[in-house]
Length: 152
Length: 84
Image 1 (cartoon, rainbow over the protein chains, first blue to last red):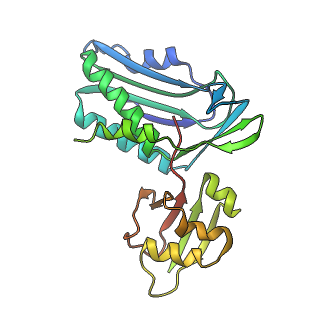
Image 2: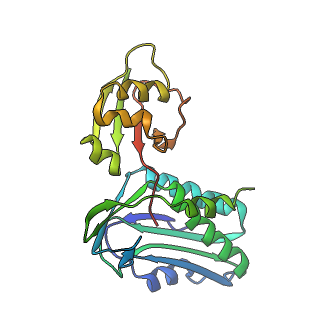
């Protein structure tokens, strides 16, 4: 099995990561992936750059727990989470979540679940630079409600 | 007991400290006790009790106010997360 969680400063090659995730596993009939990107606007302001801070150790632990929960809830083969930290610019890739399974329903659901839980449970924080200065991004209620709909 | 405290993101900036080794006086045993004790330092530290959205993790697991801390634990405080 692949190491399913990576925190890194470097960019990632989405195509290469997805190819490696499915490998030559002929059971895989579906590969769902989400890539989060740095926008040049947020909450009405232009964003020139952002910095991602994390809690080394806990971030990996929290993401691994989310992947374990996804594996328990859906019949999936492999899951991958790559999250970048450090300084990022608009159009940069921030995060990749990818899941393989036999059928699309499981892959789509598990991928969205991992992303929704990542947004509310993984210790990562965005600080963005706008024309008015630097500011820490506020957590959104919509992220909490997105995560809440997966509760059984 | 001896604790390793860690602070992240906007809280780290507000307090001006990322980590400190800390001695929790005898008789104080929970995360809530620790928060009240730190808030008593005054100034920005009062956020430990007034900012009700502050999160806490003990040994890198999310923890509530009733969580008991033990000698050698790593206790972290941080604002709601905003990754992804």
